Length: 288
Image (cartoon, rainbow, N blue to C red; front, side):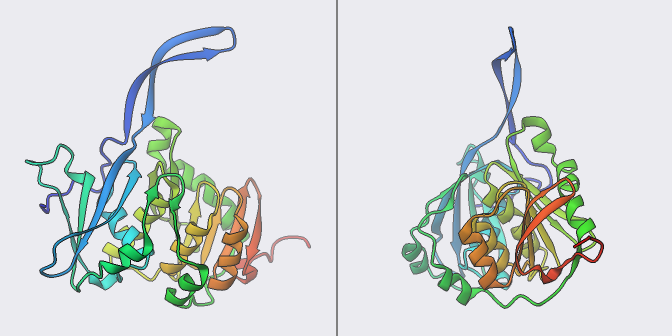
């Protein structure tokens, strides 16, 4: 492995070009189209003097690989934020795509037995299969403090702010996005990926690497639905408010209730639904 990562702010291979037949009504046109990139990435971890442990292989959109690897290990409860020393990539002399293998170097020994217990199988669409129970997630999540309180007017503006900052979606129309916001609606970080869980892991991993966790004062918006995995990853990172453009699942709502997360769904136009812990949403300006 080598410590020569790509520029984290410049996603590589995030889109490719293919030839298509575009049918529009009674007309057909041969033209180029751009597709979102999707490639496997192996996540490894090792403490001092340890041989690397292969933790998972996830299908992801190339770009921000260090963030994805760190975010995945952190949100799955396999490492603590202060343990991360750095990230290495495969040797370019031995690998065609060095960023397809990522090694997270840790200050403390990595417990490989926890990987065998969890049976990780990661995909772009479903996150982690064989997920630990909600009871286990609740045990390892630190309590989330009461604040902040976010105004209705801020929440309804989040989707437009997120959409305006999605360059890969502009090129392909085929990626999810996760955005981290301040309580006043200022965008702090955005990441895109073919997998919604990957996009969130990239956002959280970036904050871990920047030393900002726990994220007790931030607001999360995801571009799709709010699943159980989205809520539990946010809770592990200490995010108190999770918003989604689409619907939450019933397990996502149950997790939000138990983990102390405010869960907001269907954020569209001038409306949204609050499913859990509404005390963090300021509705003083609405008619009841």
